Every structure is written in C-alpha cells, then in structure tokens.
Image 1 (cartoon, rainbow, N blue to C red):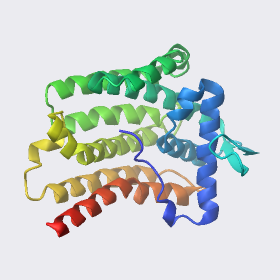
Image 2: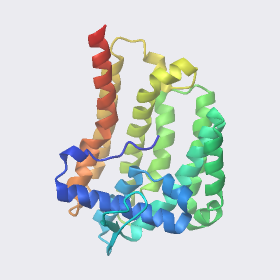
Image 3: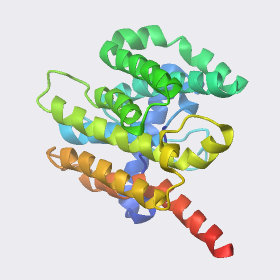
Image 4: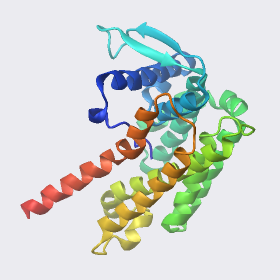
Length: 279
C-alpha cells in the first residue's frame, strides 16, 4: 500500500522537479547513512511527501549538499535534508519491515523475508525513538490482518489503515497542528487503502485473496463507484491540507495531492479503455 503519494512530474516546472528530487535524494541519503543499504532499497516517494509537508509547515533549517551516488555516479545533484528527513527515514524503515513481513506471510517470498531480517535489527531503537508511531503501525496492521480473516467491509479496513497513517503524520502530539495533521494523514490513508484495493481487485479475485471491493465488483458501475469513493476521500484530505499554513513548496505538495496520487488510477483506466476498444 505504498508508492501512491507521488508527484505528477510532467506537470512540474524543471526547477520544482529538481527541488522535489532533492528531498527524495536527501531521504535516500539519510536511509543509507542511518540504516544501511537494505533500508535504502525500501525508499518510497510517500515518505518524501511527508518530509516536504512537515518541512513546509515548520520551516526547519535545510542542509543542501551537491553529491554523486551509486545510481547517479556521473552527474552531481542536490540532496536536501531537514530535521524531518530523519523522522521520515525512521518511519520508512518501520513500514518497510512490516511490509516485507506481510509479503513473506502472504506469498512466502524468500527475498522479502531476507529483507525483513536485515531491517529487523533496527526495530528496538526505532520503537524507543517513536513509541507512539511504532505502536500504531503494529496495532493497526494486526487489526487489518484480523479484518481480512473476517472479510470485513471496506470502511472497516480503510479506517484501520487510516489510524496508522494519521499517527505517522504527527511528529509531536503537543504541537498546535497535531489534530489537523492527524486528520489529514487519516484521510490520505483511507484514500491509499481504497486505491490499492481497486488496483489489486482483478489479481486478488484470481488468487482468491481478500479485497473489500470485490463485494461489488460485478456491478455495472464498479469503476465509477470506486472513482467517486476515491474523489470523496481525497477531498476530505484536501480540506485538512488547505487549513495548514503552507507556503514553501506548497505548489509541489498540491501537485502530489491533487494530481500525482491519481497517476496509477489513470494508468489502469487507460489500460482498460484500450482493452475494451480491442473487444
């Protein structure tokens, strides 16, 4: 359920795209220096969004470094970090570990089990550093597994993932913006969960796997119904987002929230339209 909170890069001006990629590179660099190569391989743009959102809201000092790296050894590029880069890196490792464990349990993929073992050694320190967030991840994922066994409806499952995401977006419970950030993260979590279920519906049906949207997949208006649901959910996230006093990088954040998150949905829609045109 990760990899959805990305920018629509084609709609960003070159300087804004470089800015976006600089935060991504900063997060990658922090993961590598703090947690090693396995953590770096688990890097997602979702946590890049979190770094940019929190950095825009609180405006901490930035550390900008021109660097080369293994994926880009020839050309120097900018890496941008703030105090929230370390926070997002820690959460990235926690999420990656449980995601690998979930893949291992579901599909018995040895590569994911091996990756989980490499990340597991960081769990004690991360639990100490982020007790509320790590507890929310563990509790919500355990409840989600139970919901899957019980074939729970989409609202139940989406709300469990929302509880997880809501806590991740709050670095400090005592902060003035904590409630708004939690509402925003929860709404975004519901959107991500439903989008992931929609994209996986056909595969899950073939595998006989749990998917809360399969209950009404046979209905003629399935695609429209899912799109309406997703529009409502991202609208709830937008309401909370627009109450935050964001100035720095607000254009990039809006690009992600109002356009980028729909990228994979749009790709699937175009694929289905082409398939229908051939029949």
